[in-house]
Image 1 (cartoon, helix red, strand yellow):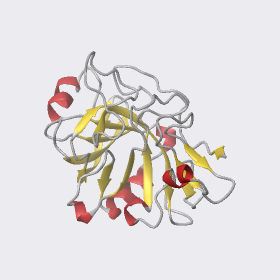
Image 2: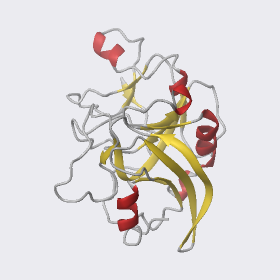
Image 3: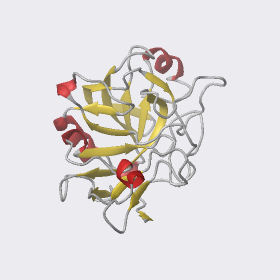
Length: 238
């Protein structure tokens, strides 16, 4: 079993603002920590100024809202953090990694890694595994119950295209802190919340994937509106 390295970073740099070299930001701000609805915007930084490129785009978040995640921000001391299976979306600032999908090829920036998912592709959500929150490729079709359970979604339109949100990323993923967080296509035309991902219409997801430019070190900012307003200046948010 091998790992295909798609992530556009090695280790998360923890700080108190969007990295200076990041020139693209995807921003979502639900009204509260408990909300599963948000508006999403695309921003591009020119010099010191953030300019809106697109939005608002309606998105759905975790069924139980959001909780502080593990990204490139510093979560408040003593704050409740996202955990595996809590059906909450991770809040904070996160790198954006590679894309996966069902199509042989997609419209994307030349440097954005993309892989067509096969039955041999796994995404490990087993917190006890040394490969937790990693993409793995089996040298054979899944045989064991464990391998089948870790398979990336098969024949599921909502997961026919997805873009990795680097919450708790490898190679130093923290056990039980949450895994497999993506942008992907929403269910029920936006009528259903998620288990922790950020979902949107297929049209808007394709637009997002095509817009992301890895050379601009894109980040995802997810913060409830009150937190966003409080941290906007100090974190240099759009």
